[in-house]
Image (tube, rainbow, N blue to C red):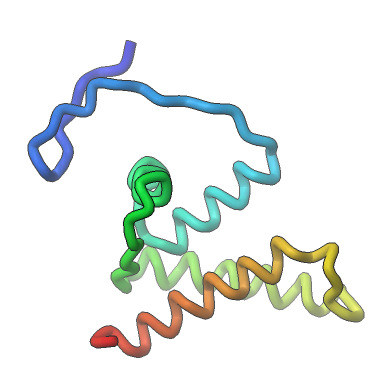
Length: 108
């Protein structure tokens, strides 16, 4: 049984919700939560409840973006062209672009 804890709004988080994912989905989830700067739990809660995810730049987010962009560069160098079989890569590039645009223009 998990230990109850308070969230930042003084609510008890005493319920556990779990589900299974494929290794590929788990990897994608790890990447997206790292880039967002949120914990995986907070990222999933925000996504499931259709709340906007606001990325606040900090060293951890910067490092996650840097590492992910390095991985993308390696993948793009490996590919001759991007086709529909690389849908996940295109979605990841789109998400990183949104985050970087948000970091560059925090007022918008």
